[in-house]
Length: 382
Image (tube, rainbow, N blue to C red; front, side, top):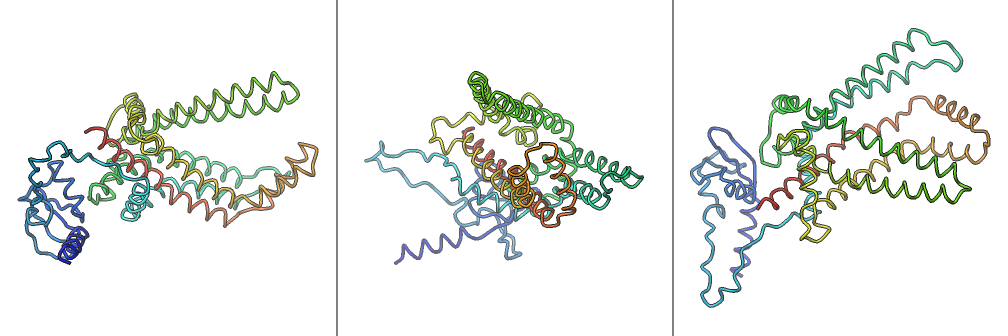
């Protein structure tokens, strides 16, 4: 009975959140486990001021139950060979996902503001293109030219803001994970400083992925052209195997490039090299605990969600496309019918709403990789 009461009291203390004051700055709220990590890192001392998040009375961190008064039990002299040091444990994959959602919830305002930097220009471009349409066969007028120019400018603005968006997610996630709440202006100012490096890496990384996708289209064209030739089919199959291998190798290299470029402040080449090094670690662990496979699972979950959103928002168009493919033999007539159907469809509000939902939730992907990076790096640096 006494043991049960002690366990209940201990659980209650662990659930309590605290705010600490170090060198005049307040951090938190954070639970005892987080405070213990700060203590182990040398960031929190027993004489630092601390208080419960629910009260305004300050004491010291040394008075927090279970933080500084945890003294290890004296080892038994009879069983020295059975005493082993406690090894740091990885977060479980479910814990990583839960922490990702929790960080997004805590910093939802900042993440939404970052998303708006790239989402608003894109939406303005789409709305302008939908509202200003010319009838088929008519000459373009000034409104159409203005809409096209406005759409191009908004596309450029969205691309320019993308590196700030990427760097901002890294900074905001790391700050929240450390128990801090950075000001929005400070976070954006820090993110802008990384713009040249992130922009160069984005061009390289996304450019290589685009080339690999074009390589896949070329393979598909070869397969279609050589449908009656066994040699061409085997050649296309060999190219497909090569493409999958190249895609996998490059995916390993760029798995953590954003985290190293921003959180570690490393250069262009160093970010890619360190990213590949961290992705390949953990070979002594079960495969499902290695950073590479966990990163692949996180990316697969997100891409599955995007595929579902895309399928739901374009279901009518896809259904019409397959119906026309089955009934129309002339490729030119098929393209003309699809273009007319798309123009008749006009502005699709449900599709736009699903697209906005996807973009608002997209920071979850970046947050998940930051959480995985922090967990993997902390473990493998020991």
